[in-house]
Amino acid sequence: MSERAFLFLVGAFILASLYVEVDLMIYGLCLLLFFETLTDYRLTTLTQRLFHREMGPGLVIFQNVQRINFDAFRAWRLIVAIMLGGSMLLINEKNIEVLWFFPWFMGFAILGAGVSGVCPVLLFVKWIGFK
Image (tube, rainbow, N blue to C red; front, top):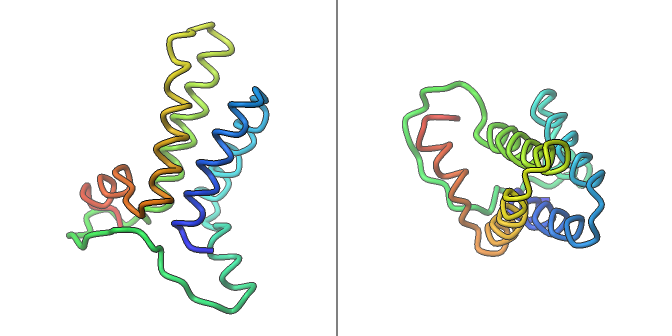
């Protein structure tokens, strides 16, 4: 599975779980993204190893000067897990209902990144200097 397909699936999963209003699915996704960030066992690389196929990310990525020795895809996973999990916790625990828009926006943005192949957050992370 490429990173582009992974983005599409993550976006679709976020939107589906928000639509059926099962917050545990969002929290489970955040835990999966945290696990992938901490261990560097990514679902995309594991499926590529399982099928003995090497696939590129399938996303628009520009080359820049590497200033931080940390993979950009791992940083993206960490950012998404913190922002999505944090907004869901604030909505549910602190009753800040104004944030309902944020998880929906993230779901549509990640789904759109999977469809188009252009992820602005990943481009920004690469621009900062992540590997």
